[in-house]
Amino acid sequence: MDRLDEVRLFVAVADALSFAGGARRLGVSPAQASKAVARLEDRLKARLLNRTTRDVSLTDTGRAYLERASELIAEFDALESSVRDVSGPRGLLKVTAPTSFGSVELECVILEFAKAHPEVSLEVSLTDRVTNLVEEGYDVAVRITRMSDSSLVARKLGEARIVTCAAPDYLQREGAPLSPLDLARHETILDLNLADPTLWTFGRGAERTEVRVHGRLRLSNAEACLAAARYGFGIARAPSFAAAEDLRAGRLTTLLCDHEPEPMPIYAVYPHARHLSAKVRVFVDHLVRHFSGPPRWEQGWT
Image 1: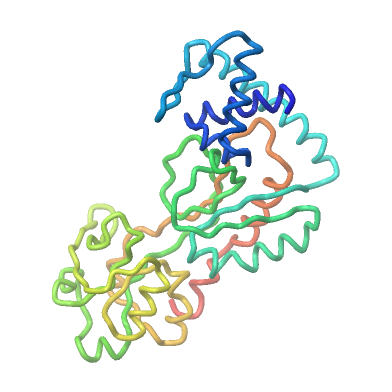
Image 2: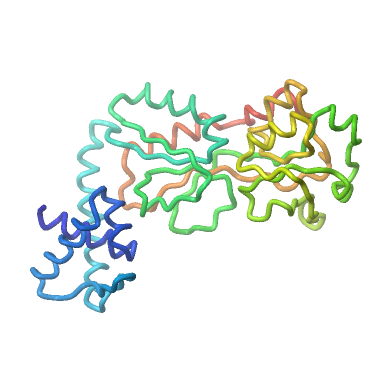
């Protein structure tokens, strides 16, 4: 391991405040990370990190060294990327996206990108967990949220409406709610991905209201909630891209359309960098082109 690798491991450990987190980011073992930082400290004849059995923290010297080391590592990576990028996008591209959107809308887009750029290897993780792009080594994430993280660059891909829906046989049996308050007498299907699955928001701006709902089925993703709705278990809420096929086929019917909440923006996000690598730039441009114009999932049922 050369000196640059030792500095890179120190920066990763210091950013994560964890040997395990820093090692995971660079694909080495915590023991290797610990030995590399110890060698760096020996060579500098200075302690950079305070270590306890549970915590890692920076010394004053370590904090000053980290600031300059981070700049140098970023400049070195930018230099290498600029040389590699002359011949076009190449290398490993790590992408993460929400499970439902990834499986319904991203699969073909990613395969088209892979076909067009044979020098790029792709590692795609579909998860509803909010990942730390820097710590976990992802290049790009697709997120459906209102962005508040200023450490990330965000390019908007589109919007997803949040639709309330139920199966025709359920509505024939129980009747359709005419206002959000009518949901109090209905069985609903709860999505555990929401911060509070029992609190549904309706309306926009000054007309925004929150309604407390109930239901005996609590499921972990939009597809499961929609499947339960198709079986007549109750009323579900889901992003429009997830419900589109069921709505087109008439298996589900939209409800309370005049009370829809604000649509959720869809972004491609990536960490700030002095030099954006070609693989990230070209991939994000590919996503923006694909999702430009009216959303495909809104067609045929709205």
